[in-house]
Structure formats: C-alpha cells, structure tokens
Amino acid sequence: MDARKNVAVAEAIDIVRAACLISESREVPLKKAHGRVLAETILATRDQPPFSASAMDGYAIRREGLDLESLTVIGESAAGRRFKGEVRVAEAVRIFTGAPVPDGCDVVVIQENVGRDGDTIRLLPDAKKGGDNIRPAGQDFGAGDVLLEAGLRLDAWRLSLVAASGRDHVHVARRPRIALLCTGDELVPPGDKPSSDQIFESASFALMALIQQWGGKAHALGVEGDSEKAIVKALKDADADIVVTVGGASVGDHDLVKPALSKLGLALDFQSLSLRPGKPTAFGRLDDGRRTLSLPGNPASAFVVAQLLMKPWIEASLGMPATSPFVKAKLTAPAPPAGPRETYLRARTSVSQSGQFEVTPFGQQDSSLVGVFARADALVRLPAGAQAMAAGDMVDILPLDRL
Image (cartoon, rainbow, N blue to C red; front, side):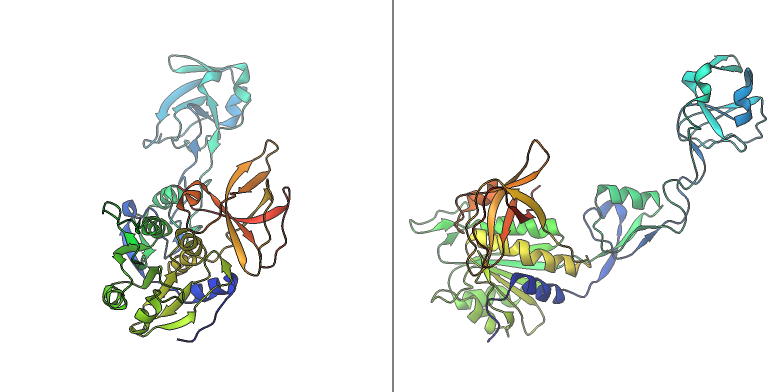
C-alpha cells in the first residue's frame, strides 16, 4: 500500500494518461456516431464537388461569349441533372446553383445581369463583373485527402464532413466504462428524508454527467455508508474499466475506501497530490486489472480533480492526443498566495470592452460549496509557492466544460 505522496499535478496527469486503456474500436452507423471518437483516419474517396459547379443561378457560357450582343439558350443544367451536349460560343445554358457546369463553359453570368426574351438572352453591362461564379471540382477536398485524423471527437460539423466523403459507418473508440461510488454515513440520496446530521449526496450527479460528456460510459453504484464490508461488496463485481470513489480517501478513522480496495488487491501509483483543493486523491490498480481513482468527499475537491485527472484518463483511453487545457486571462481582482500546493480557484470569465479575456475569482473558495461551482465557468491556476497577485496580472485558467 505504500505509494508516493504529494505528487505534482502535471506528473499525476502523466501517470494517469499512461495508465489508460489500450484503445479498442467498433464500427457504428454514422447516425449514431455523434460525440464518439474516431479510431480511424477518414480519407476522401473522390473529389468534392466531383464536378465544376455553378455558384449562382444564371447562364453558363464560354468566356468569348461575353463580347457578343446576344446568345441562344440551348438547354438547362440543374442540380442532379446536368446538361449533356456541346456549347458553342454564341450559345448559353440555363443553370442553377450547385448544378454541373457544361463542358466547355467557363463563366456563369448571374441571372440579374441577363435580359431574356424566349430562347435569346442579352448580356447587361454588369455581365463582365463579379468573376466566373464557378466552384471548381475538388474545391472542398480532393480524392485521397485526409479529412479527419483518428483521435478526433465527432461533433456535428465533422459528422457532415464524414457524410460528404460518402461514409455511412465509421470505426470509433470503445467508451471506457466507469463505475462511480459515493461513500459516507452523512449522505442520503436526493428524495430521501435526511436526519438532522445528514446532507443530500450531490457530487455523483455532476460526475456522472461529466463522464458522459467527456466520452465515458458511466454506471452509478449509489451511496454506501462508512463500512469497509459494504464498500468491498459494492466494488467487488462492478463491471468497469475504472472504479471511481468519492469520499473516504483521506486517513481518518472513517476513511475506509483504501482499506476496502486493499482487500481487492489495490496497488497505488500515488496516494495524495500537491493540490488544493484535492490533496486526498489516490490512483491505483486492482488485482483484476481495473483502475481506481479515489476522489475527495468535498464536492469542489472532487470536481477539480475530475477535471484535472479523470478527463485526461478518459480522453487517453479514447485515443485522443494530450493537449494543454490552459489559456491566459487577466485578473479583475486580487488572488491570494498559493501556499505550498498548486491551487485552483473557482472563477467567472468575461471579455472587456477592449476584447481582453478576463477572470474574476470568487471570494468564497471553501471546498464544500456546490453553489460556487454552479456559478463558475473556469478555474484559476496558481502554481505552488505563488505570491499574491493583483488585479491586472495575467494567470493561467482552466475553462470548465459547461454546456
């Protein structure tokens, strides 16, 4: 059970990512792939568009025809129904937006610059202005182009790009299965009747939602009291790639998660972090190969650690590349010194009239406060040992995944 203590956050992230699942994939219909992570590279099988297409409604002609007083309309080209035939200099084809440009034509004169009488059109003075109004074949992408790399999450726009390539199925990463157990005699589920010394359990609702949002498959194991036997029973057969516990991770008489996990063969990678809030966080492995992440019981601490560690583990298990989550912002209010541990302050961001990205830490930072987190949209990162900072100083912030 001996394991490293007070591990730096950056090192803990590296440890967690290195312990991710070996990525597995499965094929799913494109209509069910929203939010999933690609497990393959998507290549274009043909040019898009596969033909030169009109960008406007008008008339397709040869460029030399721009100097003629009139032209004869010999046919029509519509989307999905191209004109098949030869177009001579003195001829024109009525064409609509998205329709294939007839062979030999290299200009589309928009209909506003044309006067028509029966099958004869007369080009108005502005006909030579405005370009050729043609979208060349392959303007969006060409055959063989890499459209999307493996490891990208399929949002709405990427789904459209895959569909444009002609694919109706894609290979995506299997979502990691995460079992979540909250512990503590003081907790009762919402809807139950608490005693005078109990509170409603609330952390699991945020964590379950975040797991789903980050790409995991969440399974709630409910709430167990401070009973080693009950915790072992709840976790022993949990069908999961990683077991996440909330509460009972410190060293008090009622902190029974580590003793319970030890009965399941726990080997710890680390048992505490140099972090505020979130020091009593442990990460390890059970005899059967399941990973374990033990989060602090205070909701704010659990949410901070989830953002810092659980999200990278999920993303690594999905095959997503590591990226820095931090951006710069200007403080609008002073920030206290950090002390010996890396510190994260719940905060609210804004944009000044000059376009400067700004952040305001909340005055209340107690780790038991859920209401402060509900109003926050970012965490201000203060390095270990950082001195007090003044309004106007630049800081690193971690944007929260708010909907």
